[in-house]
Image (tube, rainbow, N blue to C red; front, side):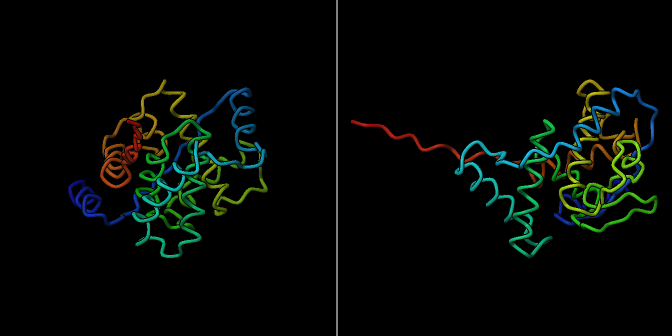
Length: 203
């Protein structure tokens, strides 16, 4: 099974591999910090440093995502949102795209057998843990905000160990299959080399 899923990823075929984050008791201060992170209602601003950087990244990622999401307007909105929420949480946007590919195969309304929802397959218990019962995990930005906040939380718990943080995210801590799938999707499909900057010289 591992070889089959890996082969599908290498060939560019998405196979959803959603797991389930597990509830773990946490201190009131951690819950408050998570609530604050998810509730941040500051107006979204561009997470790109320059318009050129935005055009390059969105153009390249849009090309790669086109087969999965044909509607260009929605595709660009999703990519902008992924870049914003990932950057806001201190995550690599390409890593988040790899995680989404593995978790939901870019299906907005995906629901796993254990109830995880949306692009980043967030478990509903997080709504209660964080204290925002009005949130919908099928809303694009809400799902990305929760997913990126949760992955950042797990990275902090694991002191930056991505392998273990991904295991926690998927509910498979200590097992290699899921972290390896996310890394493969990230590196083989979403790895991004920034275009070389033109250097102008005067004579």
